[in-house]
Every structure is written in C-alpha cells, then in structure tokens.
Image (cartoon, rainbow, N blue to C red):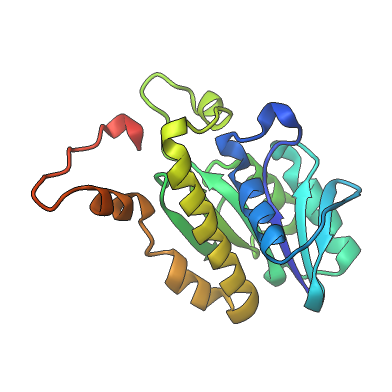
Length: 207
C-alpha cells in the first residue's frame, strides 16, 4: 500500500496558486494512471492498482495532517509508505527535491502532518521561489503563477510526476537520483539563449 497526498487549499478561490502546487502534481499523476477522484472524509481520493491511494485533502493547508492521519488509518498505510507533495519557498521555480524525514521548513501543512503522524514520511518539494521584495510569504504562496511562468510550471509538474512514478515503481533512491539534480529553469534558459549571447543576470527578487 502506497499513499501519495498533494497538499493545497480546497475550492476555486485557491485554484492555481503556488500553495496548491501539490494538487497540480497529484492531478497529473491521476491523469497519467487513469484514476478518478471520489469524496471521502477529509479528502478526494483515487484508488489505483497494487494498493495505490492518491489524495487531495479537503481540509485547509494548515490542517493537512488531519487528512493524512485519517487516510493512513482508513487504508492501513505505514508512514514509510506515505509521500507528501507540497510547495517550497526555499527552492526556486524549476527545482524539485525528494527527501524522507526532517523538519517542515516553515511549511504549515507539513508541520501539521509531522505533529500528527511523525516525520518518517517522504516529501516531494516543488519550488515556488522566495517572494519578491515587499511581499509577505503568506501573500506570495496564495498568489497565482504569472502567465510568463506557466510554461515552466507545466514542465515542473511533468518532472515531479515522473519523480512520483519512480518512487512508486522503483523506490526512493531512484526517484531522488532523478529529481534532486533537476534545474528546469536553467535548462529552459540554455535552450532559449543563442550561443552568441550571454544570458542576463536574473533579478534576485525572481527567485
């Protein structure tokens, strides 16, 4: 039994926000594996073959642990077989990172999950970059991606979904080898910049 939970806030008001990066990835995983979500208590849940459970909590982000705990109890999943997908301010957009255990790094949905079930689960962090100067973190994570960011967001979601599938099929180390070295923003810049030109230095406020 394996449980994949994408963290985010429910409802159309929060759709497409940076805080809902986890929802984007689990939606992509469900689409790839032709899974359909159905309402359960605390979450929308899709069941797959070989004991796979994919979920989107219907609690708000700061109460994500209640949903994860309920899902683990209902489906008999051990912490070692749980993976949370969530946004991360300390990673720039274009980077993802997979790890097991450790602290929450200020991500309140992860912290609530640690408080309720312990820290032993795996986490797939999706970078959303630090806020620009003058933006509080709380406002930044609830903002939507800019139109200019959307092509990169699409690539990030695809890569994060690839990492999820590796975790499901081949385990944590294989998924880490793939995911933790990716820099999709740099790859896009290298592809788009002619060899004769030197890329501009990015504004530090952008990531």
